[in-house]
Image (cartoon, rainbow, N blue to C red):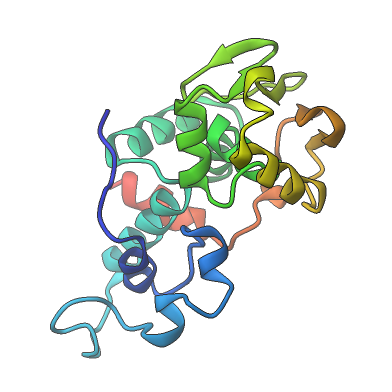
Length: 208
């Protein structure tokens, strides 16, 4: 399975904002972006005039990297969003928000989406009572995501359970801390996206 294996902090520096890709490290003062926020590379400190295409590309890359999906996956989500009723840009962000690895992160059972993806791949979670190992599954209203019974004794899972107890979840999720589970009570809306995106720029890019 293809995945990005390069340095995460370079992606934040390239996009000019924190994407919170490394969990606690992004907030404890050790974040590379706090010490060097210029774009990576020999000419990272040079001032560059960014055209309309450049702005659109950077917005697309920011969204893609924030949710941890590759180029082909992102384009597939865009094509799905185009066929749905409503505003294409908002549909795209809602689809990305519905990914299982994002839900695991948002319920508080992972410090980052990358860690959530790894936990799902290692079969630590169930979806509606069935073991699941596909991070890209799109959840639906009524779905229940829970830590697998055999994983609850794991030292890592116990540490994450403490984090879950203090996590504020979005209104479309309902946490059951006692059972290390969350229920999707509704599909996410545009207002539930906890990061600033200009999705219209992404639509303009793909509409060329």
